[in-house]
Amino acid sequence: MKKRCISLYVENQIGVLAKISGLFAGKSYNLDTLTVGETEDPTVSRMTIEMTMDDVTFEQVKKQLNRNVVVIKVMDFSDIPIHKTELVYIKINSCTEKDKNEIFRIVNSFDHLEIADYGKKSVIVRYVETEGKVNDIIDLFNKTFINRIEVVRGGSVAIEAVSTTTR
Image 1 (cartoon, rainbow, N blue to C red):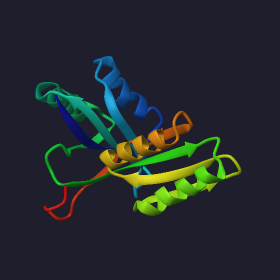
Image 2 (tube, rainbow, N blue to C red):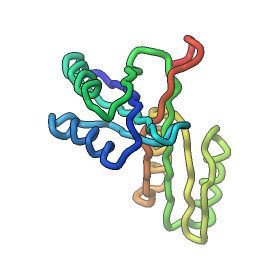
Image 3 (cartoon, rainbow, N blue to C red):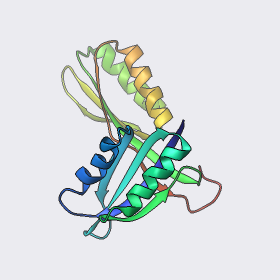
């Protein structure tokens, strides 16, 4: 089993997300993340899909996607240099002033970590980084503010690197 990342150009139409996700569900394949958004061309959307599967199953998935009429192009990012990041929001509830000071200290210690919103009793931080770093920051906040965090993760987005030294 290996973690895989693919990117699809698909027609930007109603029901395309359901068709693509239904293809995976119909075969009982699990997706780790699926992110979709409109491209520079409003008639085309781009999907980034991460999944964990063996080589044979992955080849079947790529063939099935290539046969789908709404799919314009399939790109396998598994073994090429890419730039890939993930977005996470972490809401810390029931904050005291001491907690807020600790949150601000943590935020100032990490690149790409910032305060998105705050109120009298809650603070929301935003982090855009690699999956591993996102996992680490969630662990840090979970250990520091036990049973007081809410986590909302977006799926990864990826693009092929321009230089061959990036991974």
